[in-house]
Length: 295
Image (cartoon, rainbow, N blue to C red):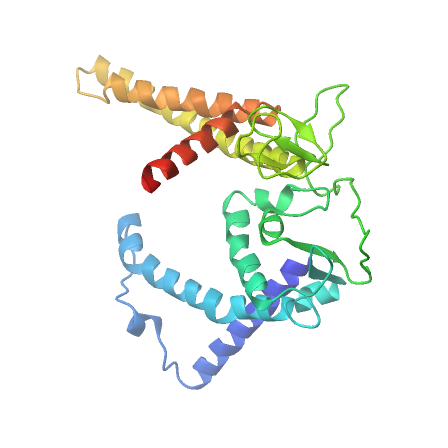
C-alpha cells in the first residue's frame, strides 16, 4: 500500500509537468526529441519508439523517483510519504537512521527484487522479515512506533504475506534461525567467515540460504516450463517439415533445448523441495569464472 501511494505521488508530479508543458504550448514534444515514426511492426517499434520510451523512463527514475525515495528514507522521517501514511519506516539493523548512500543502494537493489518476478519482495530472507534488497542493504522496514534496544529481536514467524522458505518436509522443523553451509549442510548458531564443518566459503544465514533456494527454484521452474513449450513447438514444426520433405530445425538443436528444459525443471523443482544441488552448481560456476578472471 505504501508503494502504491508513492507511485501515485510520482505520477501526480509527472502529470503536473505535463500540464505545465501543455499550458506553454508543448515546447517539449516527443517527436522533436526522438526520431519517432508510427510503428507498423514490432521491429519498427523496437527501433524507433522503444529507445525514446526507455530514455524517458530512465530520466524519471533517476531525476525524480530515486531522489524522492533516497532522500526521504535517509531523512529524519525515515520513510517516504507512503510509508509515513502506513506508519512504517526504514532503519538499519540497529534501528538507527540510515545514510543517504545506504538508501541509494537500497533503492537500486529494488530493481533486482522486481526483475525476478517480484520474488525479492515476496520471500522473507531472514527471521527479521527482510526482502532481498533489505537483506543486501542491511536495512529493516518496521512499524514507526517500534523502539529498538540492544536485545531487540524481530518476530521469527514469517509474515502471512510472504512465502515460508522453503517447503518443509513432514516432521522437520522449518526455521530460518542460525547459519547453514550450502555445501555440507552444517548448521550452527555462531557466525563464521567459512564453514566450521568443511572450511569452504558458503556459510550464510539459514534464512538467506532457504530464500535463495526458493527464488532460484521458482525462476528455473518457470524457465523450464517455457523451454518445455518451446521444445513441443519446435518438435511439432520439425515433424511437419519431415512430412513435406522440407529442411527443418536440426535434431541436435532440439536435443540441446530439450536437455536445457530437463535441467531447468529438475533443478527448479528440486530446489523448491529443499535440495541444494542447483545452488551448488550456480555458485560453483560463478566461483570458477571469477577464479579464471582473477588468473
